[in-house]
Length: 107
Length: 107
DNA sequence: CAGTTATATAATATATTTGTTATATAAGTT
DNA sequence: AACTTATATAACAAATATATTATATAACTG
Image 1 (tube, rainbow over the protein chains, first blue to last red):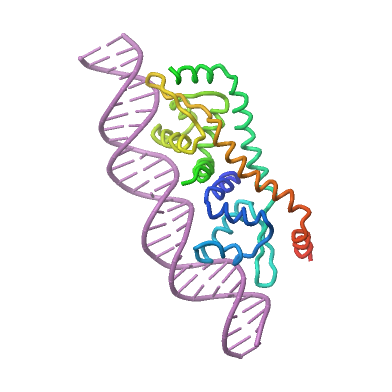
Image 2: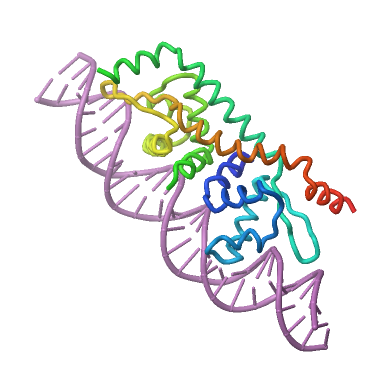
């Protein structure tokens, strides 16, 4: 599985996006991350594993705890790929075939 | 399923990303999009349905053809969400807990 | 009209994902 | 040492995703 596959796939789950949003506020342990969800701890551990595998979070060891925080790299890779689409979209905005398409749609 | 769920989920598949990359070059019909893949036409039709459902592409009717092109909106929504992460990542860069984390990791 | 082309849909098999419970492990506490 | 806490892992069930083949439909073409 490519990095992008893993990253987009990880972001596709609302629980995982919520976890990332929480981590955007700062580091948190597994239990802290699990608390707001109506879901068991093993389920959260798996989500964290997915996020880690996708390069979206990092974990360190602190005694029995495993505090997580956002990883810097994965978002860049995603941005880079999306940049291609963004560029195409702005370029296509004046493109002949799109103008024609819009005209036909409005007929 | 939220829009973001659908959009990220759609982007998680490499075939679909390749289709979008192709569409970044301009409009294309289903057969044109299917051609480069070792995959049947129904499979591509389904991928297109997923992309359309995620708001990533638009289709118009042209006789028996259904030319597809990139849709402008979905990428914005994704960008907006990722913006939250980007901001957190740049903010966290100077954050105390992260500095401490880095120090402990290096012990 | 008969045949072909472009595309969609249904049925189905397989693989993957996501959650649960039960259990293991390692560190912290008393 | 016994108990608790923090987390991980395994086994398993249910839901979802992806591809295939077969078939339907609607628009072209001769």
